[in-house]
Length: 88
Image (tube, rainbow, N blue to C red):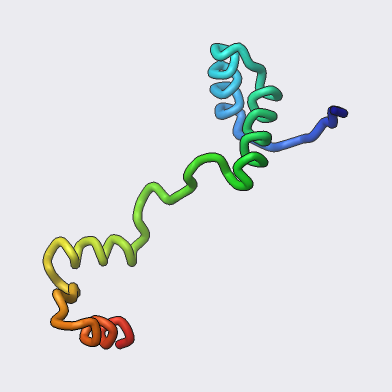
């Protein structure tokens, strides 16, 4: 397989720490990045979960309301009552 060179911009400290980590694993940065890219292709996506660490304001409010018992619905007496609440 032909090799090509590419340029990426990364934080200097992140690069340093990554190089140290991969060296401990017997890899150089280029090999580690190639492993990541091959895994992403195999999974047809990012090969790990990508999500926010902290809930956004809407989610934080929903959590707080739920913990207080505010703004919660149910139990419902029937499927029709549930559907009516969902469509409100």
